[in-house]
Length: 182
Image (cartoon, rainbow, N blue to C red):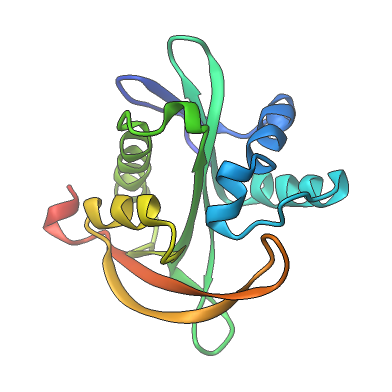
């Protein structure tokens, strides 16, 4: 169950049905969709599938700005699958996006740090958080490095944004037990 988290400027709460219009507006915005490899013009059915999957994730957070009570992004933790193809209960995969109007204000690091602190406090076996990022998405790669994620490697992956292409993707990992992440 997703807890409600509060930071100095944000509320992080479970995604609700009322978030869908803002969620759709953001995930279909080319400024967000292209750097993460989303299809540039998904149909409503596809966006609804993404939303249902994100909402049903064990830990999915709507990022709400205190000042305006406005949905400005999301943080979603997905199951991480081990090399044997089975879910690894000690790891999660991180996904996130933020309205470009709020970029470069420190809001995403604030949101992610609150989520990581909650994961560490929770009665949870999770020890590692994994993230994939297109190497061309410098802003996101820098964010992960700022938050003490370690680069594990990179590989070519098929990306659907603007047609199927191969793009270099970096794999990052954060050890929640690392003292740098308190």
